[in-house]
Image 1 (tube, rainbow, N blue to C red):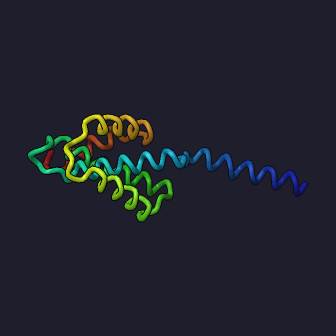
Image 2 (tube, rainbow, N blue to C red):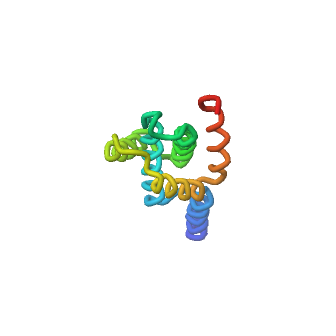
Image 3 (cartoon, rainbow, N blue to C red):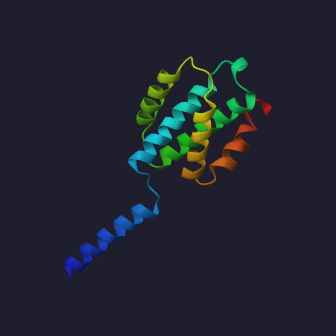
Length: 127
């Protein structure tokens, strides 16, 4: 009886973890990389990027940070990965292909993120 209870308890734990939608290490790393991309994009000189792209980047940063926090990722881990990416691309022009890659990944990874990001971006700079 005790063995059956233990098996059942482990099953419940594993199934609840999977049902909660926890992200894999690879997904977390890619999400943090995109966080870095959007953070770098948000601080580009205004004359080098369309305002809409800057607004979307700022909104994306907020949505991604909320998502990662809900997945249990600590701020220190987010900041470390984000800063590593920002340091790598600092001073470089807007990367349209990386932006498209991150958009595709984030919209798939975070349910409802495309709509949430678009809505939030309209509140920045009175967009």
